[in-house]
Image (cartoon, rainbow, N blue to C red; front, side):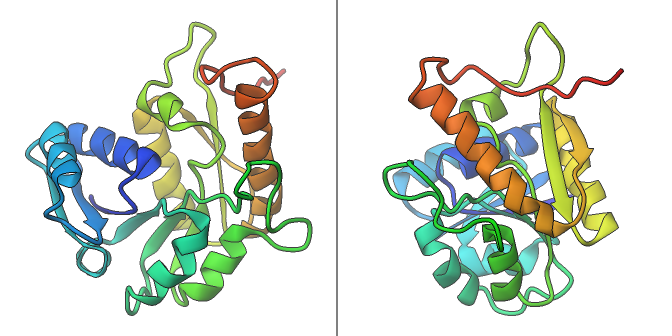
Length: 210
């Protein structure tokens, strides 16, 4: 499939590179497609990857990954034009600058804000609950780490789950988009355990069933 990456930092760069290496057509959307770091990213990703402006990536691809810093997200989405019918996978987290809490929660979520800013898009929350290093290599001796996805469109969730499964996660449908109110604090749990409470970044969560 054609996947547009909106935001080519750690998360967007890692996921885009891996999806390109599995054979998807990937467009890295960026403010400056000619920047040296973007050229390196495209080169590392292989023949199925290219760079374009954010608006071009959004126009050319049916599936979009939103991996922008939270503070820039509204501005980026406002510059993309009509996103009606697009699958928009929201990997953002509304983190405070010091990573000590969330700017939104309880009664709404970043994903619900994104859905309001990207009118007509089928928004799915996913790829927000582990660090980019786990996205680069989700292999653990104890089995596959879980990647929860939530959204209001069944086909969009199916695509997000498929993309998670292809990378080595166990994609799990966590319900409607309002469940992002739980998944975003869940991301903060990973961050706090990894960075503040001594567990380090090589951790992930697994779903056990009896």
